[in-house]
Length: 244
Image (cartoon, rainbow, N blue to C red; front, side):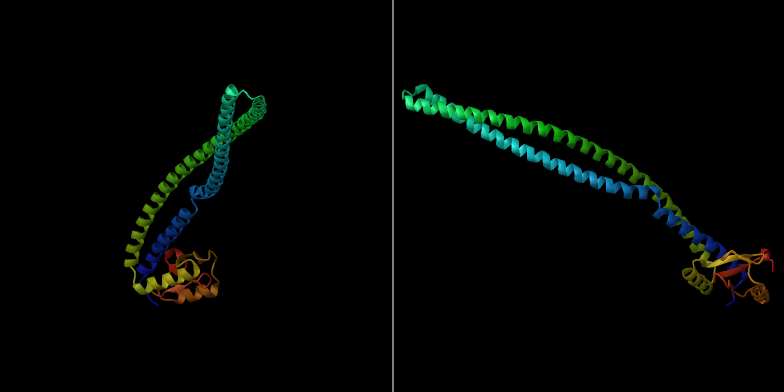
């Protein structure tokens, strides 16, 4: 393939733009904020799960306290009823029976109140754990929000530069023949680099000095001949610095 020297040299600018775009894409994918957010997401998930679990414990104690309070109310109502009956009863047998039942009810009432106190104490302990877990989750969410804002700001900057470099690349590509750009794109997609400068016999694609036999072939090529690096397979751009 043949191409004007100016177009071949323009490939170096095209390669520089593509290299910068690759760098920007890599930077966008490996932002420290994104990595930190990925790790933080695990902590947030664990914290949410812990808070939900403790909330479940808390709800269970509320249900238990409600059940005990209901039992206390039932026992208290029976105590009040038996005391009323005792106050008006004249039968020794009935009085004895009521007194025995009252004693049992009062014991039951005392036991229920003890149970209620124990559950309430446990509820306080669970609530303290829940508040601590909720506070920790809030801290993590604040950190997540700050990291997200920072990441988005960095991505906005990167995307702005990507737009500028993409526009510059388009202008450069428009100054080069479609055939040469197609060869450049083909070599770059296959080997990672499309064009490189040949400087004093050293290829910018492979970063090694070419063999004399390869240099002899390049020396024999016409200035507008498109030559490829025998090692990296990129297009070798020759200038006065090529040392040929």
